[in-house]
Each structure stands twice: as structure tokens, then as C-alpha cells.
Length: 164
Length: 73
Image 1 (cartoon, rainbow over the protein chains, first blue to last red):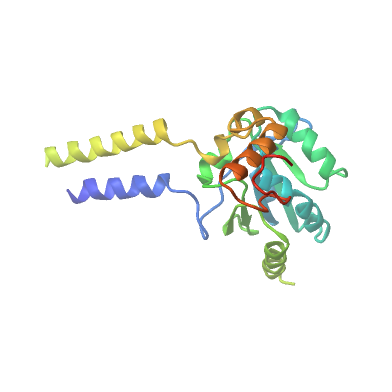
Image 2: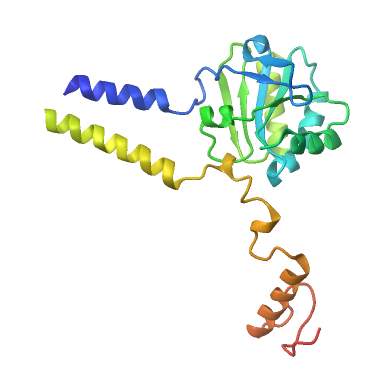
């Protein structure tokens, strides 16, 4: 009975969504603009990363995107990188929206056609963002769109992580 | 022992089925977000429906303009 219970508990733990303190989910996704290029999560190690799952049809995602563009400008990309994972059924919709908001393509935009990341993170809302530290650990979970106040708080957390 | 294990497995299996059948996750709602899925897909019609609703409820000053319940705007 004890064995069975431990197996059940272990399986529940394995299927649970990553939380603060857990390791971030590893991934390899194509670039939203050029899908022949891809990005591996391993290449982000050593940086503080804000992983954001978004879609062009999601109102909250549209609202927070200009704030992300501003936020990225405040930190060098070598230390802090905003990684967007677009989950539109058609990449074109994501590109159309993002190219209007982020004309200089300052944000790293990936395309997650199979919605792997929101499934892995078991996102309870859209948009969802995860702050990941230099060692690849989740240090913040943000469900719903981030407003100016939330971004200012986030900025402080990033600075703390960067030792500023 | 066998019965308990079987019961636990059945519960796990059933819960997995119900999750797949019922829940539409937030990231799967692209089709629900389309304009044609809204209850009043035509903006002008939605405004008119709102106007009629306010009149029917005999409310004055609802929405953005003053109304006396006469049906004339």
C-alpha cells in the first residue's frame, strides 16, 4: 500500500506545473520571424529570462507587449532577455501584431505551434510569464497581463537578481 | 490490496478522461476569442440591443446618454 501511495504521489509531483524554485522547462522552439532558426533554452543560461506565453487574440497580451518592449530596453540583452512564445494557430497573426509593437525586434520571439510551453507550465491564464534566474530556476510566476506597477516591481526583482 | 489499487487506478483514469473532455485551457481559446463567437458580433447591433435593454428596464441615464424610456434617442 505504501509503495502504491508513493508511486501516486510521485506521479502527481511529476505532472505538476513548475513553481517558484523549480527548474524551468527545457525547450527548443523556432524563431517567430524566421522559422528555420531555432532557440534552445540552454543557450539562455547565465541570463535572467522573462518567458512570456502570448497570442495575438489575447487582449491582455496585447496590452502588456509595449511595456515589455520598454522593459527590454532598460537592460542589456546579454544579462536580461525577454523571450516570447507565441501560441497562435497561425504564426502570421503573431508576426502581424508583434511587428507593429516591436518594430526594432528587440524582444526574442519564438513560435510554439503545438503550445508545448503553456502545456508544460500548465498555464491557468493568458498571458502567463515566468521569471527564470541565471541558473535556470523559476523565481517568479505571473498570471495575467502585467501593468506598469507590476512591471516596476518586476524591474526591482530583475535588478536584485542581476546584483544591481 | 488489489481492490484498492484497482480503485485508485480507476479514479486516476477517470479524472484524466474528465479533464480532457471538459476543460478548455486558456491557451486553447483562440476560436472563442474570434468576433463571430461573441453573443452580439455586430457592434452597431450590440449598441442598439443595449439601448433597448435599458429602455425595457426603464433605466434613465444608462450607457452614455440620457434616456427617458421613450425609445427615441
